[in-house]
Length: 361
Image (tube, rainbow, N blue to C red; front, side, top):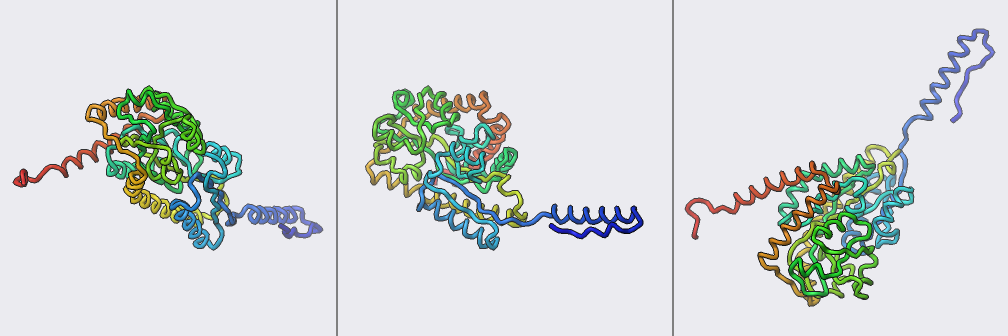
């Protein structure tokens, strides 16, 4: 930017250099002054376009643009057009994308505890999930920030259930199945290894073809995810035992927000956070409808015996210890989760105890 330099014809050299110094200082202030930048954040996801997820998130993006008067816009790439989660993460690293809506396993090398809620069979019901998330979501946001990501929200997908072309209830039977594991998701592979189940890694886009060609015969996924991906059309049985809580992280790289005014960043976080909370609510409400849809499609629900459930849960504890021993999750974060869980279960137990004088009614 042009700036004025006082004439140098003066006979006073000190005055002349004082004038130059003043001008240079002014120029430095002008050049270095922060300015609000307009930005279009490019965010990719495997969520199908037209899904309830995308409708809500597109509206949240429109709300961000309106609230910031167009200074911050969001451009989505849905349906996996920018690749699976691993490819999305690579594109973020080379700045082809600013962010993604990704499953937790893709971040295991950057922030392992991002997948703390994925511990096999750690939750017995959704009330426990809600209590733990209320206490621990801020810890995940903090950890992601240390890894270079700004978390706009954590979006529930739901409890994953084993669904198969084969009728299996026990762990022994499951060991004979050809079970899908997300490609590159080491924690999922190690969890299956603890159950002594050999995983078959495939990308999300390859799963339906894998079921069609009998490359795999079993998936573990939430009902609300199975339906839009059409996997249910190749499956016959559902083991009625929640295996793992599945959720996605909506993140952008911290460098993508550099230069954006603080007030606009705050608006982005607040507005997207509200949109993602709405996704959470919708997915929770859609859960029962998804079960009914699977039943209408003819899938049979299998109930394991108490002994089979006990074996699944005891083996899940071994899988949890394996994750801790191998650093897939930290012992500290696991301890925090169990502390919250224990308190929640104690409170639930108190609520279920009948009041004096009411027993037997």
